[in-house]
Image 1: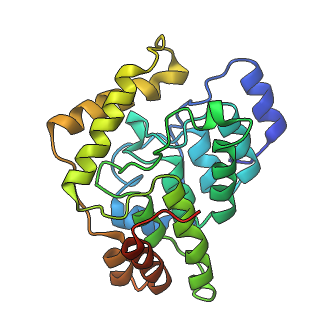
Image 2 (image 1 turned 90 degrees about the vertical axis):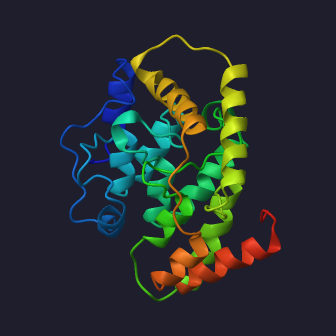
Image 3 (image 1 turned 180 degrees about the vertical axis):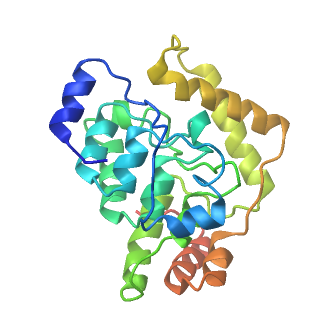
Length: 245
């Protein structure tokens, strides 16, 4: 929470789990309160955030970057986090620079670690909210909303953000492809630090058996929340049907 990078390195050097759960994590007051209120995440499901969750929540981006480069899972949920991912928090926190940094890492020297889960990094929480939904729930000054949205939406889409969140066939295809990726990939030995990978494989299997909760399409969701800049940015991408580069 304090963002002490030297202490973080010291702890990781002594093999403290990078995915250790915080039993008393707190986000109030913070810019995430609207997302908490609407989604229910963190407020009633016994959420146990990881060090990455807390670093992002408290705006300690340098520590968050260190954790991601050291292998912290940012694009998959842990079973103790209600489906909340690091990417969700970046979106809800309007962390456009952090998202751009993550994109760069996925194609740079750290790609083997940062992008190890494949090209699609956006998945819903247990209530059906995807990263673009979390962006809609962000709080901040009204001024400059359009310019912020113009940066946020293309960045999220480059990381695999889903625009058509009510299209069951697209979601089913995404789940099927992810299931195949997991089955064809290496089978790691179970440890505390890779527990998220095992939790994720089970979640994908469950999604193949049961339908996901479908929330409104992000463009409509943004308009309902009066996030007009986001609504326009998402609608433009949806109409173009392509990924901005």
